[in-house]
Length: 339
Image (tube, rainbow, N blue to C red):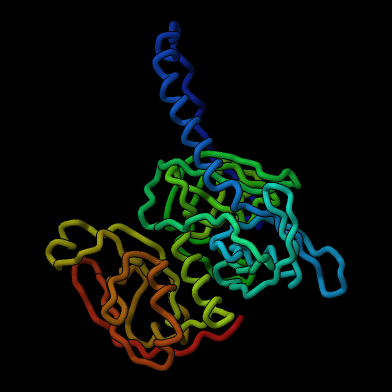
């Protein structure tokens, strides 16, 4: 089932009415509409064969739910949502051409609502390419492919509505740097890909706000790439613990030039956990993290990526921007405990 965010109501402006005598405008728009249709069709043709339906079963063999997934390597690695696989460890995967394979859950990460499966197949499978979600801009075309409500290989299209959102996972932790889109999602779309016009997977669809039209969310592809690597190497995601929540914000150009910064964005601290490592350093909400242990931070997904197991037990420098001043904090990191 697609993760549901509690209802709330948004005000909407009435759409502008078309002007009378607009036939010439519609005619001139035809090539643009044709180009848009071709773009969507080309993306579906390129990526569609890598999108699968996932059916889960408990150890007693009873059905435990279903969702979507996307094959991301020719040897059968499949990305999906953690909440899709949370009810069972045994899975069957159905491809676009109707073939059914058994699959096993390699690991899942409730903190990002992502999971990784491996298809048991002695053949090369069609795989989609993970793109760089940091290159996204609001207004870009976004195409969702999945299996909502049992209707396989369903395609919806919209735009990237916003970047750097935070979304609360089922375990209560915030998923940072989430993509907001108006591409329609429904139960069963969970785990399917959000695809750019270049045919690259830029997000893994995860949630929709019920009662509000066109507000849906996907976990960024850069976060998915990190989780994939950790599960392949360790069977789980080990992380150092900093004790903050963060989002991605642009850096003031004047300040970035003055400080000689290469990145155009940073990670703003939105929350600080009481008793956590960051709370003992003087770091404040509103600080913008520029680097961790010397590595530049261009967004919240960089924090997730940089706080790996290699930093557990280390004291590392973290550079932040507070108002217009750059400051350095030395933070002793601990290991994040499993929820």
